[in-house]
Length: 66
Image (cartoon, rainbow, N blue to C red; front, side, top):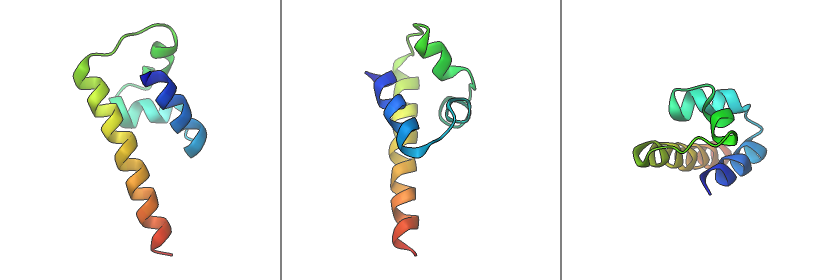
């Protein structure tokens, strides 16, 4: 489920998966590892989900500022 959310986020934002990993999990290989079967811990899942929500919120604010 988390990987599906991340893949959708990457498509919507056109963010490279390595950049996402660095920003969301401090690990540039995070997405590749998930694609290869890595199972993240609960705190990592929460941090990544929070990153995606915050990113969308800040992107929405910047669009309204124009």
